[in-house]
Image (cartoon, rainbow, N blue to C red; front, top):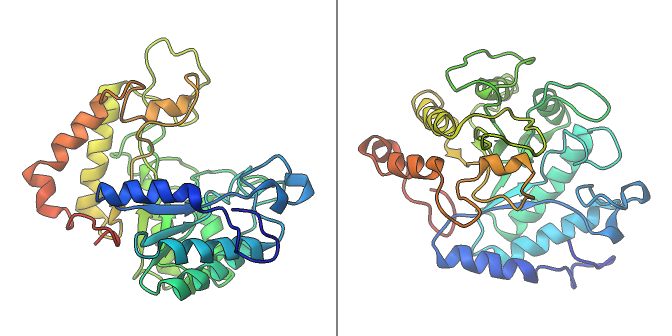
Length: 307
């Protein structure tokens, strides 16, 4: 968000010009994640937290509207916020699906007014089994969104089906278990609320693989060796294609994360720090070029979207 307390005239969108132009140049599809707030827009208790929502939601909605108006010919998919169900992504306050739903509803109207054909995704909901004043299960959070009237304010649910400590063959569907199959709980919730016609988009997923002798921070996602990481990711894609027609889009977590060398997020990278492809990259590239994948892969994304 840029700085203008009264209008969107001076919203800082220029940094996006370079990013959107590069995506256009390489004929890629872009999901614009509209997340974060500048210092001037935050509540006093959130002064040092760029992941907190603005104190006045009208500022955020004005920025969303300006973004959609500026890039409507190049961006077709917008994700409204990220991980509001866990701290610190909703500031110094408890997760609040009703408050987030109000943000989503206003943003949806603003985007559709600028580009009626655009798709609006919910925030990417973080998988968690916790139930506290700082973190809320993504399943309970989605229910809270539906109870607050969110159904008419998004085109697809954004989710993050990480594998954690087991592979895609782990078929336990349990609110107390973190695994790839946990995604089914979100799907069941959508169906229960009569919203089964919509899809889920995996905006982040994967398995972590840290090098032997890792001395950085421990991985909260578990970790594998690189062959197991590649195998599990490939099996996950194959399972989704075979069993989950409601999951048309799957995004890997990181190409090359902007993280410190001791940050375990580096274990999701497709590329080494020097740009060399990791085994995961080579495995996925070979699979996507195979007759098996080509037979079920949708048309290549164009500059307006994913279909």
